[in-house]
Length: 390
Ligand SMILES: Cc1ncc(COP(=O)(O)O)c(C=O)c1O
Image 1 (cartoon, rainbow, N blue to C red):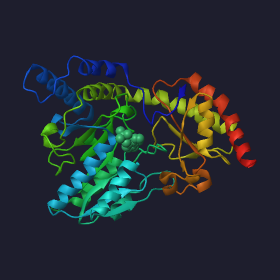
Image 2: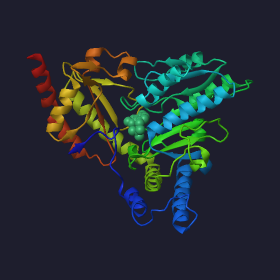
Image 3: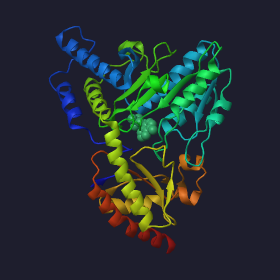
């Protein structure tokens, strides 16, 4: 298989797997246990927390382990918005139209809970505009949630600039607006420094950077008001109840430490392969259209539309040739549902339903890219011909 769907999930790194194995086997203690096996498990969680904190330039006490990106995002958005509303700070939340469903649907849920939500758009490249963001802020705004990098088109948002807009807006006000960012797609490609970014909360998912599925991280800045989403035991500093996934936590920390090493070298190598794929596609299929920003973008993401095709049909044909890629649209009950991200970017529907995402990884090789380039034009032509004959 030529795997070009790393934005969906990435293979477990060997070192992460090895870090997990002892806790799936003999060292099965519950970190809450007061005996040796419990202390051993707690020590593993503490070590992992210190490692993750170092990778993010945070304090260990600001790092919570969760069950993944979705839980981190839910906890951050609901937990902060709830706590600030209870403190009388306000009832308004700002987010964007291009968030992953994990953020988009939480924003809808916040509306059901009586919050007033402003959803800002983006330009044709998928970038949020600072002026539009600034204009959306209100005295009663408690939370802004903007993703770091888009999972479909790879566009990277100006998070540090958005934090600066908030800082200026909040000056002289009693309550500071909290900024959360879904940075699930960022590790491996960007050095994440929560202080430099100026965020109050940041969400990560381990399986996107070589860690295990079902494990995630929530950075929560010290002092940010927060009401836990999960109630129960006092784990995770009273902020996330439930017995810790010790093996998952150990694997997450090791994977993040590797992902945070030589970010520039990894990005440059993968960006060169992405360019090879982009140039090859544009040369062989002249009416191919690129989606997303080509400069402020994830180095591993190439989202492209092919005139006259339906993306699911192309994904199926590529799969039959041993290539794993992803479609930007979902076909349900024979009805095309174009991607909400491409729609927000103003991409025409015919182009949105014809979009394919190739997401490369550290293990992707030039030979694999060349093989895809040898196969893709014929398969695109095949889908277009069969649709034209319908
Ligand atoms: C940008 C983004 N946010 C959130 C998620 C959800 O992460 P998880 O699958 O770990 O819950 C994903 C996963 O695709 C993602 O790409």
